[in-house]
Image 1 (cartoon, rainbow, N blue to C red):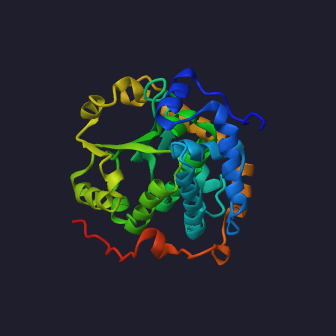
Image 2 (tube, rainbow, N blue to C red):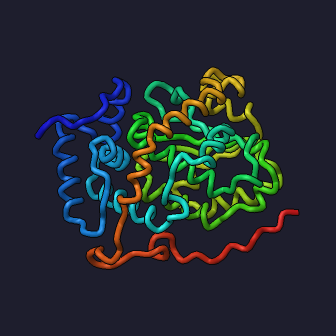
Length: 310
């Protein structure tokens, strides 16, 4: 077996991969080959097969081959079931505009050298007349997919979402799509290879607390335990020290304005990846055994009534 074609890890991440994820460097080519052998026998599943992509799934599943198979299958099954979110993603005008609002950014320094990646949502420039929650989620899936191949911290130590709700407009709260939120929770648990380590919410408007609790209650229970709500930045900084936040928040972890420019470049560089993406999917007609559909994956979904916010 030849060497696996992978980016070398930093010493801190290599140590964590070995001790926490059961990664054995010498065994990587064999692990990848076992995964490809299995993929070759799945008539219904057409998946990407480059080393860096597949190792993201192995790492996210702590090198359990069975879990990795399930993740990969769910990844493509859910993407195929949700074309409104995953089909024909490009850096089109809408995504470029959304990127330039700085609503969602990946912070340059992780939370400590071998620590998780930090990502920040801030609704200050998010115009709900222009963008829907679906647009934001679609943009986020592009970033998280780019991270599977590019972000070792995210793959090995997971990622943490910081959500600043201080400038959230009430009209955006009123149009929240709870079915979509629930489905994203399922995707994040069953399909996303990078592990969500925490969601830290700050400055939640009092009108938003009930909605937040509802959104949280729709998440898989393991994710629910990872939600933390703080009144303000000062409270958050007792958990995530200020130095790890952007300059706009009084920290020293880069400027949001620079991050959005960097992210635009990175996503534009992924143009071909997203263009090819539609060929990778599942075909339920060819699945051996029991076929799956939205009900089997997401559970039967009642319709959520539009919530009255008064």
